Image (cartoon, rainbow, N blue to C red):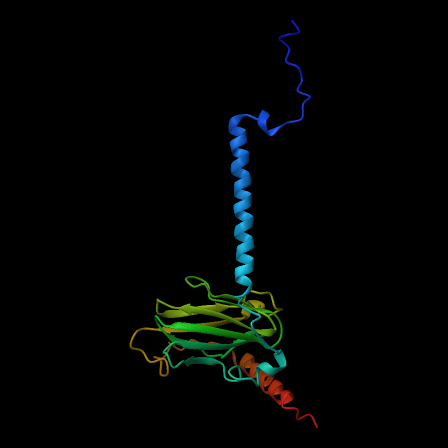
Length: 214
Ligand code: CUA
């Protein structure tokens, strides 16, 4: 009788004693874990050299007086690509008017902050998503293949006006001139109060930096 009663397994569970299927799942699981760790490890080493911020340092108090950030806007390089120079501040972006670039053209964004941590994101069809740390220049490159007016957002909480912190970039159609873009249908891009404050902040900072305190 007692032969039929299964004796309780008091042995510790050993790998060889597991069911074949179970052994295979354990192997697969371990392999996945190793692959995951390798991918994360390689990525962290590789990307450390190409972070979006950190390569170029620029103190917040020097932003307004340092080229090219003293004149935010879009500029055509000699090779026909574009540089978009952007200054983020609480709570907006400079230039206040739309950035303008041609379609199918490489655009390098360079973004610096005048004060706190901001974000620089173009949602939708682009990979543009920067964290803009004070003291650093954040950079990303994007080629726009669809003409249109794209929204730019701050995606790092930066204070009470964070959710008003937007800007736009216009991607012109082929044949349109970025230096003389066709008129928009009267869309205001920033309110006057905000514009004035931003300009004052810029000129105060530029003044301070030139050391004319006495
Ligand atoms: Cu700037 Cu949120």
